[in-house]
Structure formats: C-alpha cells, structure tokens
Image (cartoon, rainbow over all chains, first blue to last red; front, side):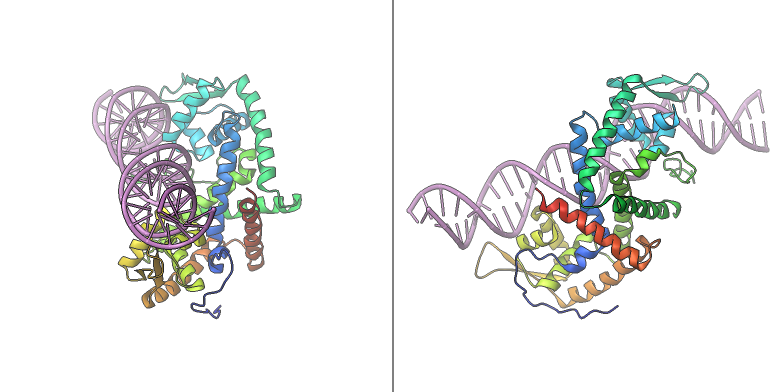
Length: 160
Length: 160
DNA sequence: CGAAAACGTTAGTGCGACGAACGTTTATCG
DNA sequence: CGATAAACGTTCGTCGCACTAACGTTTTCG
C-alpha cells in the first residue's frame, strides 16, 4: 500500500504529531498503557496497594493456596519479585506464609480473612478505575475490547 | 540448563490464571504492551534502530525540520531523552543538527537523504512487525482496534 | 533595563521486566 | 544406593523507559 508521501512541506497548525506514528498500534498501546498504569497505580496507592497485590490475592482466592513459584506462574510476576510482594502482603496480614511440611523447599501462601476483605475492596477500586479508563467506550465496546486484547495476548504467549 | 528460562515463565495455557485478573483491561494492556514492545524493539534492532528513531524521522519527514524541543512535543519523547536520540541519529548521518541562525538557543534538525531511505526501510519493518502483532485480527478488526485505542488515548490526554 | 521564559544538556530517580547465582531440598536415574 | 539434576526461595544486579531537577545560554516581555 503505497501512499503519496509528501516530503517536507511545513504545514501549519498547533501540535503536529505524525500520522503514521499515531496510527501504529504498538505506539498507541504503549502510550495508552503508560496512562493506564499510572491511573491504576495511583488509584491503588490510595488503598495502600499495588497492582501485584491484587494479582496475588485474586489468584489465591480463585485457586486456593499455592507456593510462591506457582503464584509466580499464575500471575506472571517473576519469582524474584514475588518475594517482595509477599513480604508486603504478609506485613499487612493479608496472606500467611508457612513452610510446606510435605516439601520443605516451598512456602505455602494462604490468603487471610483480612486479605479477603482487602481483595473485595480492591475489586471495587479497580472497577471504578476501569470505568474511568474505558470511559469513552460503551459496555458492548468494552467487552469487545477486552476480547480483542485477550486474543492478541493469547496469540503472543502461545507462540514463542 | 536448557530450560533454565522456561522455569521462570508461564509457558502453557493450562495454567490457572485468575479470571478476574485476565479480564482486567489494564492488565491485558500492560501484558500485551510488554510483548509488543519487545517485538518492536527486537525487530528494529535488526535494522539498527530504536522506536524513538522512527518517531523522530517520521516527524521530520511529515512536518519538516524542527527544533529539538518541538520534536519532543511532536513525538512525546522528553527533551532530556531527545538529546541521546539525536546523537544516535546524527552519528548515523540520518539527520543533521545545525544551530538556528535566527535563534541561537535552538538547533534545527533536518532529515537527510540517508534518513529518508532509512525511514522507508523502517516503515516496511514496522509494517511487518505489526502484521505479526495483529496477526489474529482481520483487517477490519485491526482498523477498529486502532480506532478504539485512539479514542481511549485521546480521552486520557485531553482530560487533565 | 531586568525578570521571566525557552532552549539544549547533564545528571539522577523510580519502577517494572528480567537474569545470575547461591544454598537448600526434592526428584531422577544408572 | 549414590550421584546428578532440578525446583524452590532469596539476594543482587542489569537494562530500558518515563520523568524531574538544575544549569548556562539566549531570547522575549513587561
């Protein structure tokens, strides 16, 4: 698809962002993700939480207790970073970290009662934040958007 | 040894990732952007380029020569980072950096003939990379996806 | 004229994704 | 059985990116 590329004519106007640039999905993705991440991070900070906290707590509630390594696989957080996350969660008594009697290499991480409560709160916070994030989209469009993202992500995680 | 890295990453789809987690648009966005960024970065590296190179070159070609500060505004790159980008581009003779005689604070950045050629190459590379990035989507879906991203991004840049 | 602003530049911060390596414990296999 | 490999939790370090602060120079403006 060859378009006529007008070389260098000084158009006028205010802020000129190149069209080719602003149409690139990769660029749109990273720009939007930057905003999204900031939105989420700041929103969660008001609830004394980070994105990772939610990921771990949600995983624990949905699939039950697990070792750190398994949590790492479930949530996509590197196990080197999982240590710190669990420290923070344990400090707040949101999870319990106990050695596995059947396999003394592992710790068994369990969500606590407080953790469950906290998770519910985070879920609400995230609902609101996503409402803001996806504000311009209708409910149907939001679903579709999520589905497209999922398809794309699946495609790139399955393929090495 | 061989699977040393595979041990760190979720490598199959049979893993239990919490549903609530994988439905969050913010999470999908950041995960997908991570993959996308890596794809683009590695692809461009094969052409001895970085994302920012493309942004600057495209801006120069579309809107003509500009000062570093204006390039910064056009492309969203911070002017502190623009310095290094232009150094790299100038090293490769893709742009020319000359002091502005009318305003001795500024440099006037101009794309060179080699820069134009390089830009065409990068455009092709990026086309291919986006083909891979958006592989699961039909042409119509790709357009729609880009449009949705644009709407979302506009919403979050216009609103302070 | 003097203060404020814009410019290019250097240095540095914070964070997230990721890798290397170590000691410990468990699994595997000849 | 014993040796070797693997998995686990942990610590430390790297790299890239978004972003801020500050400084010297030049231009603009009240």
